[in-house]
Image (tube, rainbow, N blue to C red; front, top):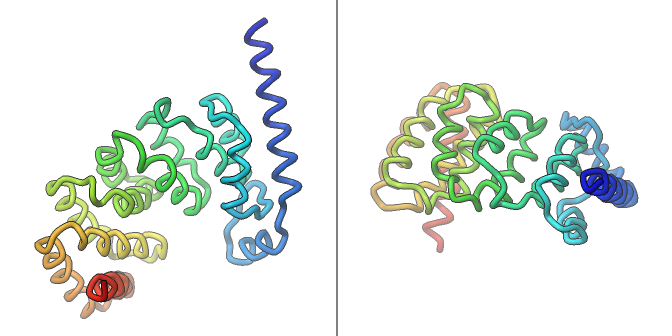
Length: 228
């Protein structure tokens, strides 16, 4: 009986969330994302601040977060991140969700609002970068950008090496994320900044477009740091 009641309450919450999402629909954003090739199972174009505010109306719960994730709408995927209790989330679940994420936006939300707050974030970062799945590699660089100040020197060295290894690519999202990651790692120490500067100096001369793009991204970060 308790199990049935729990499901009944969960169903009511899910229905309420779906109604809130539909009432908050932003057709202009939906059309813009679709035109850019950002495709979801269903997308109501609800802005992130609206979803964050919406999440405050519900108590975080592993069961609710899991149900929202399985629905697969853009908005339910994002809300599942906001409503997932950190203490009940595992590294295994993190990898599963990153692999299943249909768009970079969802990986970014996962990294920023959930994964970066876990105790296992640095170790997860390395596991992701060592995974052959493209979403995992992307998530590894994105997570490293969020937790650069939590990484050990050995981890930073490994991430820099992975950045070079994966720098030759036609995947815009990957080389953009590598560039941002290397830029953030420049903040960790003068020695790391010098090492990365040497790498991107070579990239700047490269015939490979993705490496030149990475060099440009890092240069923007270094220019920003110089002006602080």
